[in-house]
Length: 477
Image (cartoon, rainbow, N blue to C red; front, side, top):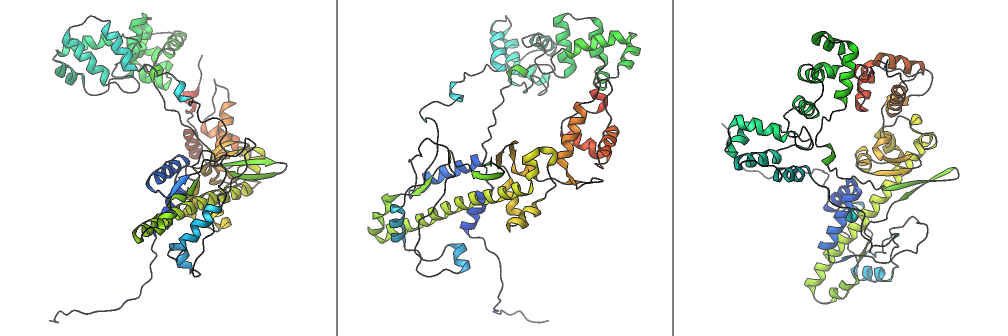
């Protein structure tokens, strides 16, 4: 058995190490505009070297602002690795002197910052819980029943349903008998909006039938044939209930007027604002890509710390570290901006027909096509186009919208999948509602236009567009 021994060996290997500066650049590149503004605000708070410029441009047509960086005098020419890692020695005193003498970059911000936002002028909307508790105060009930109703209100979902916890748990917590709890729950279901606190759709609709004193046929259809209503199998309903088909149609019209979501009018949806990162302007026959810098904090190096470098060595080291961090941040923001503009210019070049004629002329394109054109990696293109929006003559789109798989055509070039979706939507919008087109009919219609596509692909695209199947789109009356 060989003995154990200690040895020292020299081994030379190569590995790619991401510097903190490179990690910061990649992080900034993939941030959305809103996230980037938050990061810049945080950097302004944490790095005393940075400050935001206050100068504004005259109120005229906005120009494409340029992010310039002061000249940095480097003692020796950096190697390629040094340029990436930022370890070259910098004459920071000269850097600050150049920065102080440089004119600040303009920022275009129309309007008055003193005016309140639109959101600040809006009144608060009454919530469903407040509306129900107000009705509870107007209702004479026992203490345990009041506790039970309050628990029910507190457990309603966004649509106004009581799906969990079970009513037995709420009754036990309120100290109420289960049979009494069922009766109290029926009383709550007659609060406004009628059907609130129901445990399923059937119970919700039946509460409305009772409150409105609707016909018994409507009650029976909801009570026994909700599944046939969903499938629009009106013949089965007529056979089981012994009704004429026309009577079923009339009852279904009434059911269609009931509210399946009691809390619909109390749902407060948060507005989703989209601010484009770039604009595409058409001037004559040419398209110009302009970065949207409006509302973006404009960073500069604070002159306050220039004298601090001469105070003592410790202060000088601290200021130099903060200066290096600020320099890399400004450089990374500038690089992010230039990259987005460069990628957008490539999209304009490759998708010119889209900007001229619309979505039906969108060409198939993948990340590799743009990556090869701008000499970048596909992962970089993916980061650039995620959560970035562009304002075009055709509307506002996410940059990822322009990347589509190809669909084969018989006599022309391949077409983008997004264009096929748009044509499917147009075909369905133009159909006869009494005789909706099946997926196979849509396949045949597209084939007449030279687009070869499978039926399952049509079904997939239809579902992505939020369009029901032909059996559920059919109008009987």
